[in-house]
Amino acid sequence: MKYCKKCLQPDTRPNTIFSEEGVCPACNYFDQLQNVDWEERYEILLDLIAKNPKRPGQYFDCIIGVSGGKDSTRQAMWLREKFKLKPLLVCQSYPPNQITKIGVDNVSNLINLGFDVLISAPAPGNWKKLVKEAFLRFANWGKASEQALFASVPQIAIKYKIPIILWGENPGLQLGDLNTLGKNGYDGNNLRNMNTLGGAELDWQLDVITEKKFLIPFQYPSLDEFDKHKIQIVYLGWFLGDWSLVNNAKYSTSLGLDIRSDTVSKTGDLWGVTALDEDWVTLNQLIKYYKYGFGRVTDYVNEAIRNKTMTRDEGIRMVEQYDDSCSDDYISSFCEYIGITETKFWRIVINSTNKNLFKVTDKKIERIFKIGEGI
Image (tube, rainbow, N blue to C red):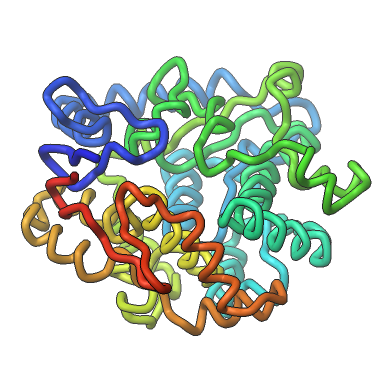
């Protein structure tokens, strides 16, 4: 395990490759941004919009996938106010047991801001079965549900014949998940290759839901379907020079976005602005930490280090203290939801822990690498 020389990105992040100088892709991309002609990128986006006019009978100019959070609120407002576009906002909702009140309120806020919001959700019973099976098999309850969240947007784009999908950040450039890179900086049609979306295979899902028709919400449209319907995903973050966790949150809270009141020690969320619509993502961030040696706080401080609002040493202290944070209440509610004991929960987590990075003894998981240096 090695760390980026500039930030605290470890080379254990799936699908990432450091440069020969030991710098991660996200830091390399950030350095390139200092020389970007943002007016030129603005013109590129204008040209993209002009080349994809509304089709006959098409009411909306584009689609934006939303959760009601900071990124989706900023995207929707920017497109409407800056480009005078009429976007259809598509929200794949969590089931009632999982969604938070903040999540509901923030989607309502988008509606109150004057947007058309289409809300869809798979059958709650099937969702729960797949969440449980994914956790038991992969120690990752989101193996199927993340697929549903991401797949809902292109599915609706095909159904409503709206070819342009505006997405947020480019995970290849801004996080380092290189498998998502397309033919240029804004091409998002390889988003399907994101590490988060692994596990879309039908075999294990069919062990739980035996009829394929009930798994349609969990299947990302194929490349052939994208080509047939001329679907293009555009990473909107590529066009915004001030795209960041903090900037998007500041902008969106000024428009009515509610954020978390939980402390970072419960969520690993330094500013309470991520995953507002549900709590159990925090579990997966905890498990991600034990699998790869980094969690949510690492992602936060990396951005802060690049923006020079935090030093690397300050980031190290934050990661050491909070990167594995997760409230016991979230663990308890998740176990109750899928019907397992907390003892079984921890047994599965321990079995999935990377033994090259952690020492496991009697339910205790100890880090054996040094933050910022590796092993």
